[in-house]
Image (tube, rainbow, N blue to C red; front, side):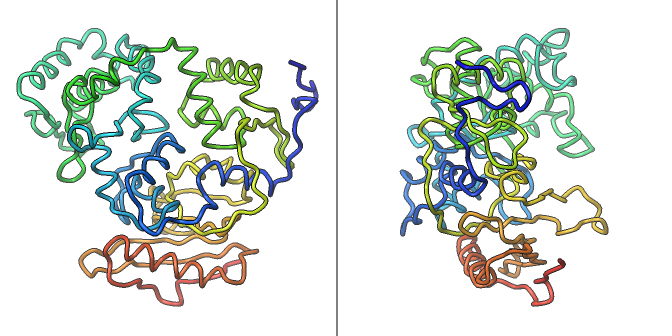
Length: 406
């Protein structure tokens, strides 16, 4: 394969893509642009999860838990129980499993073998947070005792152990919670279900992951990285090397080797996107639509926008989640969802579900400088759809909350 230009880093036979063309490729790869089904069934949901490879999990529930939103953004209103049963249902209903992928994520069961190298590294103490790595070595006996209790008693949450819940709350993990999370990262336990305030309940992996999945062959690390990068490329459509690595949070060296191998095989095609400093890659099967039509409210953790630098490169849209920013320093609000119209991010809305009053609260809306003339109308329609999907009776937001600060 010919070498990249030493000055630009761009392959001499790279496909030249305009920024609008790159946006359309990315949106099509992510499942946007197709008409939403009149009635969403398990097949629609399965295909969306397969296309994206994961739904990121987040603990914030000010609107709705983040893992429910990507399917809503692409499919419209659907029964959230479909996803619950796929993730935590009994027997044959379970089609997803929890693991650390981009972050904590729900993934198709068939991806389990592709993360066993990460589990093996954690088991050796070669990965994971510093506070957890000791359970692979000098504190392993403590973790084994926790595992023995789960083996004997069945599924348990951290709060079922005497020292499970620390006084500092869930973010200030106690010893048992850290041991459980190491066991989870190392693949000894898996998430059996969620309960109460979305607390993870752990069980032995062999009692959670179906036996046919556990029997699938385990690829070596290099092959697993190639397959994960290929999946990232399919999901992104067009991406830089950094974008591909970020999708499953892979380390630079093995990701670089996987990208090189896939480029050599012709799975990744070199591209140069107008305005991008980095060389790009397009998956060989990526669609190149001439037009993208539709609208969607996007979760802060949606794979279309979770890599903020890529969001700026693709859409010229600077986006930061401000949950942890002091209230007086927030620019757009606490839980802000970008609003996609066709092939551009046209607005952002700060939303909250007031479940006691059955209202979808619109705290503020900010339109982008070149938002289409019908942005307000289309946003109002999408907010109404979201309220209905969440079982809320009305959308509430004063006109003063809708502003153009530019």
